[in-house]
Length: 606
Image 1 (cartoon, one colour):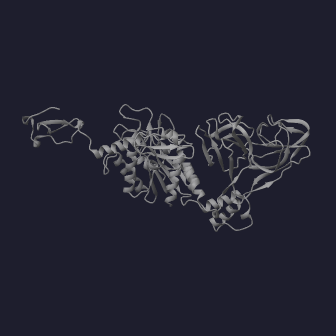
Image 2: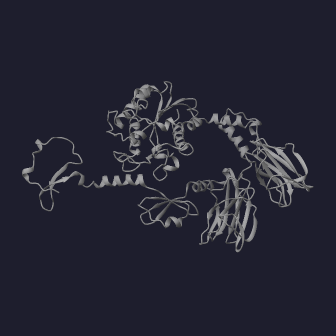
């Protein structure tokens, strides 16, 4: 630093009056020598409280939660800072963890497991929708199934079993002991025995899983295979209770007194019907090709399908390894699936019908009967469902709404999902690339605070969903002070926009939506990173400003910023990569935003 003497000091009254800049210096006394010195402001330390806030903001923007397959894998990782999140995806220790500074501390089970625990806590008197029951097993001691290929091989140290699935199960539980990496708690195969994958890999440390609920049973799985170090394999499945249809009928009557109590109101949701079948004596269906093969020891019957059948119940007995009990075909006549084991008597066996199936063939050993019934949805279900939905509909139903904002509105990805739930009729008033603040991005991309944008909203609008701020952040618009009246500053433009909305629509309900997390992929040279703009602000600073101004006017807030759960750690899972992570994906991101909007509209009815 430079040392100065008293002759260089200018009286304060003679100094020009202005705010200090980062290139200015402060004059002071050096503690050790007592000499006067100039201290550049850029070298001054940041106050401790301010530095703590900065560190917290940086951590919040840059934190990446750690995802590990097992607790052992997570414990092998040292957390980056106290409070960092961790997730264990599989095994009995699955759930959320927090780094304490020295170890990973369990917080709670994952959401699915927590929900299952909550369901189990209800008394049986409340009659849950599904019931668990032990499932029949085919056991083969002295064998093991390879988790990576599905191949079964002899091994005296293991026990092997499998169970057939119909596809109608709502849950599968497994008990077994894993002791080798070749094992898995469950290996899945389809209706013709093709390998589909596995769940929960074994390790060299023997681990007992008791009534472990499988999380990822493929929809096309028709068998689950288990190998265990001990003779303790058990499989149970959950199926929907048979009285659910009657309970729905009772619930329908309770939902609205307008629903008449009549015999039709107690109809089941579906019924079973028999249809004429074409008979082909002296043939069986080859389970590999689906083609009929001549043999006097067999006969088969075929039935055309409409594509609306949910399930089939069949009765037959078939022997031999070349054929199958049931074969499904698509509209082109190609085999799409088979079901059944040889030398097994099936009586009213119920299995789901593939959605693309247009014909079914059932083979039987000569002298055994073939019977089939198809599930038909009751004719009045659509009418009854409409009554239930009408009786429990949103008070926003039929109201005219306007979604007003930038490209997050213009893309129209979330609004249809809101309209479907609440029955609103939405006018899309979004302009891609537009800011709330001035100046306009271009002659055709006018800022939201402009009178032209406000006037474009239909005059008879009863509900306004006002979203903006992403482009203000992306273009480094200054926030200004809360009381700013400048429309080139974010606070000032917000006051102006909301004031104009309230003036034009004094009776409408106006909801302000905070901007969700976003980041650039190609970082501009004057940005420190993809989520902090040229003036050092993240999009969350603009969301906070929106929140403050909305509350100032007493307007309800829809919290995309706080409730969507997006951050640098997971942004690619929810937003499209179209040069930047700004826009929610149609498949995942937009439905999540819609659910947040829907929840708020349920909270605040018209």
